[in-house]
Length: 92
Image (cartoon, rainbow, N blue to C red; front, top):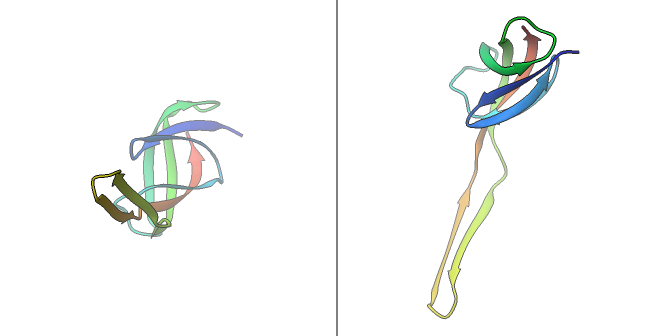
């Protein structure tokens, strides 16, 4: 099993063949194939990772609450991060 480190969406992920993982949203249609550059790979000559886009979605809502005590100030906001699910097909 060869492993590789990829960078997408400002984050780094350790991947291996056949793995399914969620990354920050990519501009690609579901079912299409994408090529990702590997920062580091073991057991492969090429630094290309091929992956298939499984689906797109949005993560669970997180609550962002701001408060300043004794100032009558409080704000509540929510945030849902978009993601893309990838299936790693081949490394190298």
